[in-house]
Image (cartoon, rainbow, N blue to C red; front, side, top):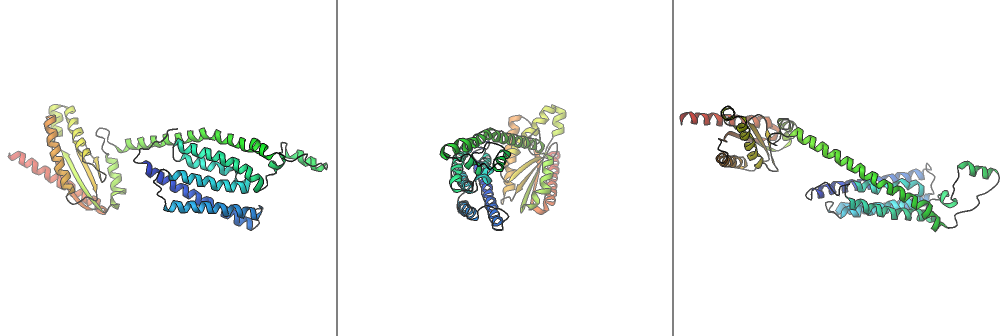
Length: 375
C-alpha cells in the first residue's frame, strides 16, 4: 500500500473531507445506539436495560465530546485524524464491554475508517489501538457486560450435546475458573488473528480503489485534452460552456486564430505548421491561471475562458501574448502571429460573450489583412 498518493498541497483538503466523513460515521453510531436503547425500552430487544443504558450513556458522552471537538477543531490538521480514531475506538470499546457479542463486528470499523486516509501510519495506529480494545472488550465484557455464556462455560460442542445433558438431568461439568488465562487465549487472541488477517485484504482493496481512481483520472485527462498541444479540447470546451460557465458571475473570453497556417504547411511542410500550433499553444498555456482555462477548438483556433476577470486582465493577457509570440517568432524564424479578439460579460450569457469575442477576433483578422495589403 502506498504511503500516500496525494501531494503535500492537497493532503490537508483530503484529510478535511475524510475527517468530516469520520464525524458523520460517529453520528450514525450515536443514532444507532439510541435506536437500540429505545427498542430495548419497548421490550423489542431483551438486553438488561440498566446495562444498555449505562453503555449508551458513556458511549454518547465520548461520541458527543468527539463531535464537539470536530465542530471547533481545524479538520485540515494532520493530527486531527489520530484523535478522531482514538475517540472512535474508545466509544466502540465501551459498547463492546457492555454488549459483548452484539458489538463484535464494530471492532472492524476503525480499520475501515483508517483505510480512507491511504496512509500506513494511520492504519497501523488504528490496528494497534484495535488490538488493545479487543482485549479490553473481552475482559471487561466478561466481568461488567452482557453475559456471554460461551465465555462463562467455555462450550466446545454443538448445541445438541448440552441439550442432551439437560434432558439427562446432568449439568455443566465446570465453569470458567481461570478467566484471565482462558479469555485472552480463547477469545481475544483469535479475534486479533482475524483482525491481522484483515489488514492485507483492506490494504489491497485500498490499492485497487486508488488504482482504478488513477486509471479513471488518466482516462478522463485523455478525453479532455488535445493530444498535440496539451490544452483542453473542444469536447471539454463545449461541456464547460453548458454546465459550468453559466454559473460564474462574470466571464471573459479571448479568441486566437493563428495566421498563415495553410501557407506555412504548403511552403515549408507540415512539420513547420505543427511547430506553429505547438508553440502558440505553449504560449497560451503559459498564460493560464487558476481562473483561466485554455482550449484548442479548431486546427488553428484557441480560446481562453477567464472566470471573474479583474479590470484590465483581458488586455494584459493580449499584450503578453503579443510580447511572447514576437519573441518566439524570432527564435523559431517563423511568423508566429495571430488574430485576437476578446469580450467580457455575464456568465449566464456565455454564448453571447463568445460570439462577441469571435467577432472581435474576426475584425482583427480583417484589419491585419487590410494593413498587409496596403503595406
